[in-house]
Length: 90
Image 1 (cartoon, helix red, strand yellow):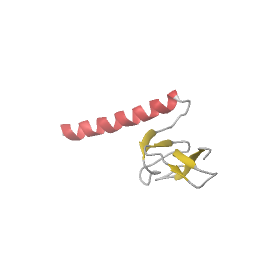
Image 2 (image 1 turned 90 degrees about the vertical axis):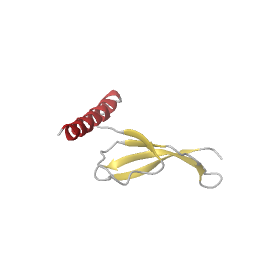
Image 3 (image 1 turned 30 degrees about the vertical axis):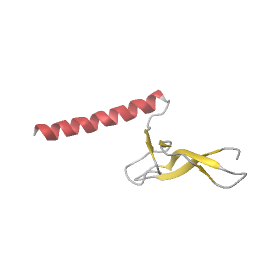
Image 4 (image 1 turned 180 degrees about the vertical axis):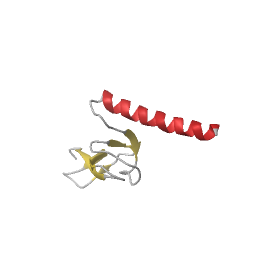
């Protein structure tokens, strides 16, 4: 009984932390983490953002860019994600 209860408490605490992070950024719902690709699992909301933990220059001259992360544009499981690109000028 106790291990199951602790697991449920841990899940609830994780949700509170996610919500608190979003509130401090002016959003009612948010999640920030880092990954090497857009999420393919989990439930996500519009505006959630995942940073790219392995950014690298891509594209061809003169339009090279770096994917800084992915933003959820349609909430769901796993939601619809678009890459956020930053031009490098190369």
